[in-house]
Length: 147
Image (cartoon, rainbow, N blue to C red; front, top):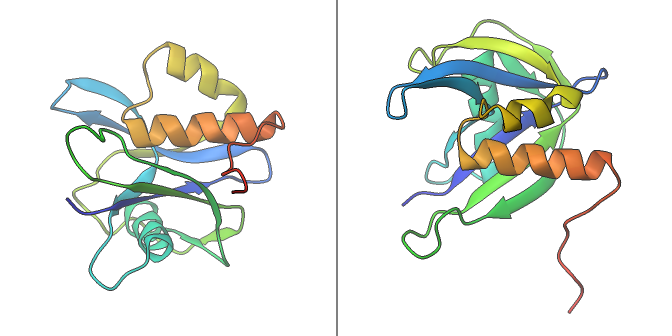
């Protein structure tokens, strides 16, 4: 399996850029963050920035903060997911990835717990990223311990 990278774009109003779409495999509408497969020769951070641009038309700027990484199903596959946060970005156009169709929305971070409870968050990567973002907003950090 290829590694995956996810972009988290948060604006000055503590809103997260998310894609609301229908996923046929689970027959559900919900919210996802932007991201995709890391291509050969591409760093996970570069992938996250590229996917944000392609899927939303928003271009992240500068070095991102690495929020967290995880293995979603370590007993079955080796598929690391890296999650990156940007607070600097600009709208440069429309989405160019026609296979990622949906509606882009700025979702208030304060609404995320309700969306999680209502099962409107799709995918482990989005869920882990949002939980990490909520934890950080409350002063809780999940960071590696010093060895």
